[in-house]
Image (cartoon, rainbow, N blue to C red; front, side, top):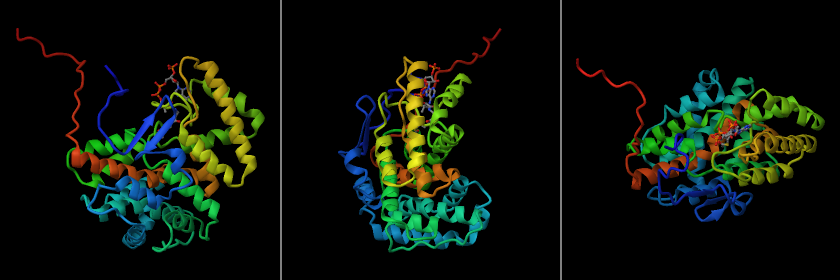
Length: 354
Ligand code: ACO
């Protein structure tokens, strides 16, 4: 019995395919190598949401949705800011409509894009920067976060990130979204379920701890002894291993390339030393289990280089993945069946009547 549903096919999808043996991610017939660095957050709407609604949402509508999110929540930022960023975004989303319209889809995509920068600035006592509905999505997010016009490599770096994480087969959060959508609940309900699943450290909660681990290492020479002691304590190395990939996660390379186009050479050298030492130790300590670098390792470094603090990393992941969640939720609702697996009962049976 596949506990954890390993290798169980639970849906048919035309959205994305993860080949864990070849180390290949395909989204709508295009490989990640082709998409990352070329497409933008807006163009992923067209790629992933084609067929999900009467018309494909446009970049202009996404800009309008950012402005609407800001006006809906600007008076509530103080209250939402008392929560951790991820929970603040989730609490705000719970107040949005729960239907299957394009407008709701766009609000759900725009919400983390506007609220992550706004909540971070609120929490740090900085003036909140309003969105610019006419700006490109990634440029606007960075402008709202940094309070300055971002440089082109920074915008490209965020676009590469948002494209890279936009969809990834039937991962835990996407599965959660599809389960909820299969009941014919609205898009908001499906996306909120996905937020719950994404939060855990075995899924989208890993990149913050990745950076903690790199900081703990401090200098390249310390990489091997520090990582060895983590493994000797029976703990996992964050940013390594994957349920599906038995070779390198292709997303790690897409993000590594984006990172190397930004500066911060010293930090990159440290990260590469940590990666090399981790892979060497994992091969020795877990020879039977191929454990390679996963997406979260370079996510942590790239988002850090772009100016996102580590407590916001998982919410930034949601910024990119929401498009995929919505695409899957619509695909499930339009063509799928109620998802209702069985469990295997291992508890006691009622006593036979005497
Ligand atoms: N460090 C050390 N050992 C590991 C790691 C790791 N990162 N990952 C797996 N292992 C070991 C386990 O201890 C186990 O060893 P054992 O058989 O001797 O007990 C073996 O590899 C298999 O582990 P499982 O938990 O069965 O593997 P699974 O496929 O469920 O794990 C997972 C996938 C959860 C991602 C795991 O590799 C992990 O915990 N990695 C660290 C956290 C992380 O990076 N999460 C982000 C994942 S990417 C994403 O979701 C976007």
